[in-house]
Amino acid sequence: MNLSRLIPIFDNSVSSWALEARLLRWLTLIWLFVGLIMLFSASYTVAAARQDDGLYYFKRQLLWVLVSLILFNIIVHLPLKKILGVAHWFLIFFLVLIFITLVPGMGKKAFDAARWIAIGPIPIQPSELIKPFLVLQSARVFGQWEKLSWRIRFTWLGIFGLVLLGIIAQPNLSTTALCGTTIWLIALAAGIPYKYLGGTAVGGVLLALLSISIKEYQRKRVMSFMNPWADATGDGYQLVQSLLAVGSGRTWGSGFGLSQQKLFYLPIQDTDFIFAVFAEEFGFVGSIVLLILLALFATLGLMVALKAKNPVSRLVAIGITIVMVGQSLLHIGVATGALPTTGLPLPMFSYGGNSMIASLIAAALLIRVARESSEADVVPLRTTRTEPQRQRRIFKRTKV
Image 1 (cartoon, rainbow, N blue to C red):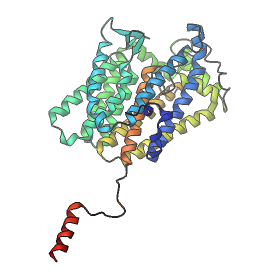
Image 2 (cartoon, rainbow, N blue to C red; image 1 turned 90 degrees about the vertical axis):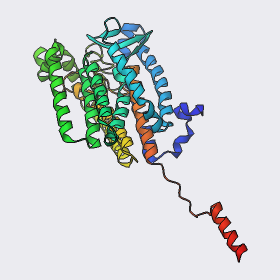
Image 3 (tube, rainbow, N blue to C red; image 1 turned 90 degrees about the horizontal axis):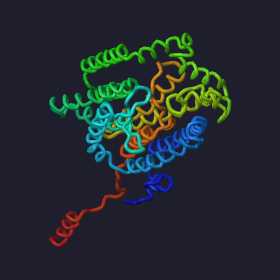
């Protein structure tokens, strides 16, 4: 294996890639670069106060980025067929880890939710890491739906259901909604009959309503979302501070590093509300530029899906696009008050190694599909005679 391919800047093979693959690669690296700069600004103050080192979170994120980029470059050079061949094992592995987080004493809690497993100093969040493999296996199942027996169909539908139940039990309603919607949209794109899709959609809505009715904090979030100013210092505090940050950005923003809300007014500023800091520092114009970047990524993702050579590859491209762009829009919707407050990170912006790994693996899968979908068949300009043809011509000459 060429070790230089593990490092993006030394990968000389990029020039031979298809146009969509190269554009997606550049968009991913730009997205990552802007996200790191934003994390530096959003986390510096809180890191200085908590860790006596303003660069503490930024330096840790850089380590995760290096690991993620190595995985990124391995995946873009692996045939998608090989990746699909092992995706189900990763899915089952992370599903087991999700249920381990529910075991008292095993799961690491934060904000009353057990979503992590601590392996030494490294926190593992299986609900984040499972996302790209959930897309891969969903695409594999629904892309070959007609070829599968009902036993296999029900087995995988049951496993997908266990993934959603495990995540919602942590509890993590936002990630459950994202994963469930992604599976549903992949099934829709695969042409699964509407009667099945309708039933699962109703079941998903009922499950969400049941979770909100049982979990008091989720119910309070929905109520505070409707009118956060009614309890601006209580349940509506996070959203109010986020709206103040977004509004303070005005047209051009306050300038890089000059956010006021990140000075211990805005909670969870380096993860769940990092877009609010971005909007305050870069304003309406900067926010529109970010949305344009997401629109370009989505457009390229759909172009790759349309050019895909087989149904499974097409569904992988669609699923990855939904996860990357959909999660970003959900995060932005929360920060701007368009959606109830949830705990979704902004891909490649928010602090966290699990989110970074999952995001770059997802981007690499989309680039891999783009590379395979645009591979041209080599057609010789002049037909050459094969050995049997030459032998027949020689035989004719000698016969004459």
